[in-house]
Image (cartoon, rainbow, N blue to C red):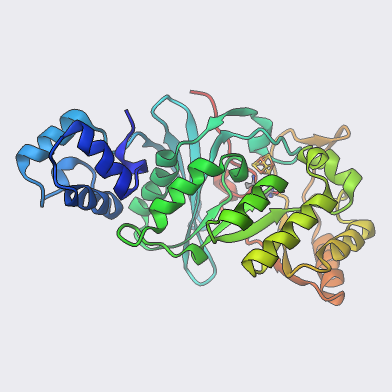
Length: 345
Ligand code: SAH
Ligand code: SF4
């Protein structure tokens, strides 16, 4: 039976109607609030009678996942390994930015079917989509170790736009004004560039921030680095992003993980400038975080040199592109971008 953490107030009321017939509907709203506040058990819900708490506990589980392990990086990043009800593992990360604002980075799939050649998660293959409750609970677990989460980035394991339905439900709960109430503007979704999903977001929301992992705008190289580019070609991706901006009127982020000696060429700069033309976009550069054993055309991937990063940044800036650089956090615990991975049960 569904765990309660993944249900909206209406769904909760509906469920309780079937399992505890006659329960007044405001009880569902109370339970929803308690979950948002981080109640650990029905017993914590002190405005419910003991009799009701016992009945609820006999019929329902609040949560399905638990923290299996916690790794702390000296830079303040914390990675949680979370065990799901069926034994699958996912990871969620707590990051602090320069000003000390806390961000939760959460996963949407166990593994990832997209298979980018530079990403640890991609190298694991795909196990399954996460349920709404499993996404909400990652947020709750992260908040349990750091009460003031200012932002969420959906940049953990998996491709969020291939699990949009469950993600939508989870975000409805996380942003619900009677519950956690996080603002949609504080949530950023990163996609490998699923054209259909971007159009869905444009049409039906939620109205969150969008980041697209471009990596390079050279089509041939991109298809080699990100096989998803074959079925989601760059011209269609750009069309979808223009459509998104027409509907949502929001600046987007183009992410480029920099792979030393591979996508830092002049051709990549030209292509990126060209792709960004006509979009309201900033480019976020992410120096590749090392993952053991990753190769491209038989050569080990390497981090970009300082000179490569500087050159790339300077040239984009000179050509009128706003460039930001992703802070490197959590490397010692394999908690940085692209390093997340744990599938075995
Ligand atoms: N699947 C989504 C979100 C998760 S990946 C996506 O691909 O966008 C989040 C970001 O990490 C992406 O921009 C991706 O390109 C980047 N990334 C993947 N592997 C990386 C690595 N080893 N080092 C640095 N960034 C990496
Ligand atoms: Fe999947 Fe994103 Fe990793 Fe690509 S970068 S394999 S889409 S998690």
